[in-house]
Length: 112
Image 1 (cartoon, rainbow, N blue to C red):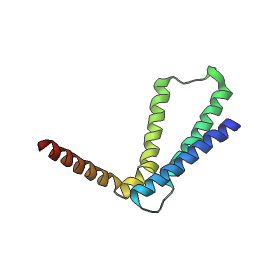
Image 2: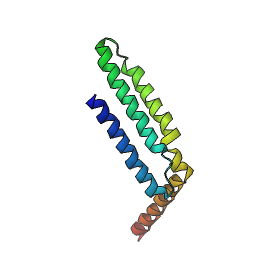
Image 3: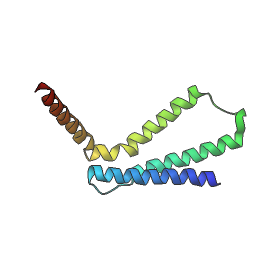
Image 4: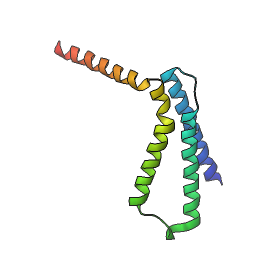
């Protein structure tokens, strides 16, 4: 359907944009892990929408069940595909060092 194509395309474009951002942050050739993270989540949303349409309101799980499942899925796949390139290329360590430098700079300004 048109909505499924729109959802999948939106997630694909988001993945490609994040891949570009990660490239500018790390200056390392893309591994496409980030794009696959978004493609997977887009496909899952397409399946979720299709199931909700097919099953209707009669078979819906309570948010107490679906909430933790969703968070767990996003966190698990996030550590696997989203954060791995940043950690592997030490972008996290560089960001922490930059934050420390900014803090010291601001502290020096206010000390006079």
